[in-house]
Image (cartoon, rainbow, N blue to C red; front, side, top):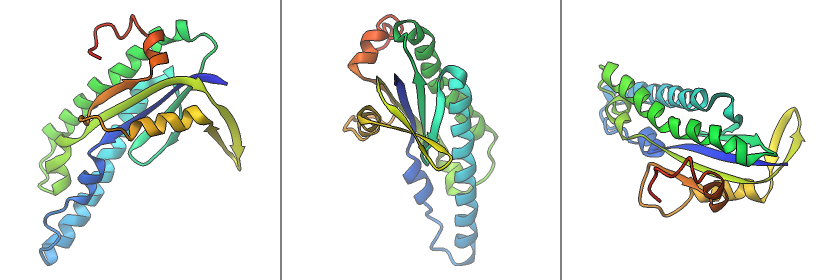
Length: 183
């Protein structure tokens, strides 16, 4: 098969979950850490749902990968499908920020998680390439070199924790949809 492969990753997640500066306080520290851990997982789950809901039927969720969502869309007509796909993917950034703003605006908790959630951002990598679908037990797994490429592109040296990274093939296909963006 061939099609669009995308991964949306919440950047700042590891720091967000690990930084609990009250953990050294005896009784209060342990309770605050547990509260912060629970709130962190709730916030990340909420934000992952926003990403999935925003992309909607444009792509299929292939798998959840901790703080990331891996999407796939088989496509025999990428020139036509890219015009509806790219705007949906770009919409993820605004939807993510709106939901984060709502969470921050409504929060009254003083745990580390709730105080630091404003640092969370979204990274999105999009590629068009080949892949194959294999069955593992009762799961469908997408595999191949292009699947590996998308994951490797997420591990880059860009000096930013919020971006849309498109491969040259997607840039070529989506020239019109991406014209207003800076490369």
